[in-house]
Image 1 (cartoon, rainbow, N blue to C red):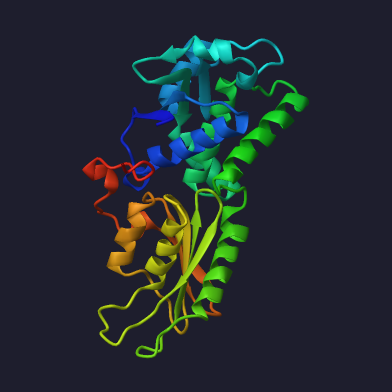
Image 2 (cartoon, one colour):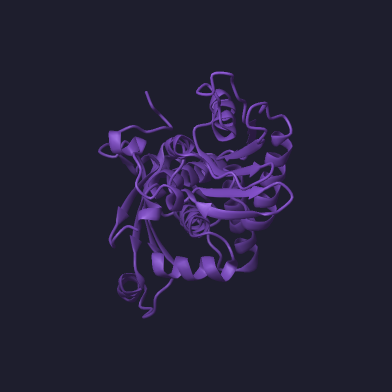
Length: 306
């Protein structure tokens, strides 16, 4: 794992899969920078805790959204990619990686900012993690030039794993449109109810699926599992959103499909569901499957199952 997630407050149930997501974000940041074998700790705290830390470490007596504490000091104008020897000196044999330092995220402020910016809490937490990761790799934003470079790196990393600025408008609309296209290929001679689905994976790819029925009825495959099968066959192991459309009514995923989605996503997964020509509603997988059996419960890492 590229990160070690530490909850210093009670963990909300809907964020039960956060560590896997933030690990994906951290790895994307390292790839964007061009380094390997690095990691850092991510601590989740509240307003009061980060204010105390900000006061103690920076003499600033107010809460903030994120604080970064690097272990490596880079020369002016240099970042991690330019300093392999400095990175090597921070290799931690216990962790098995180069320890870049600590990232402390304020969950209270993250919630506020997610609401202000009109995107999900997981998107905000992902951004704050990426922001801290680049701080730990030597980036800063003390002037406009530095800020522009750092922001470009952050966005490149996030977009590489399918986390975009406008996730609720463009991405959701596009996924729903692709699900509508998939629905047209439905094989449903018995129910005459067509369903289409489209999954967005962490690397930004999309996979479509449709329901296909069978004379034995029990062999019928839902659109969600059809799309999931296509994604898995192509090597995808992390889903970040899914859209599902029914031809004449809203087609909420069945229980089996919800459990299949849980295997490759956390409970914050956006599930975009609607009827053809009638718009859609967005709920999280945690809302649809509040109590679930996850791979983590059985000690399995879906990114590295072997």
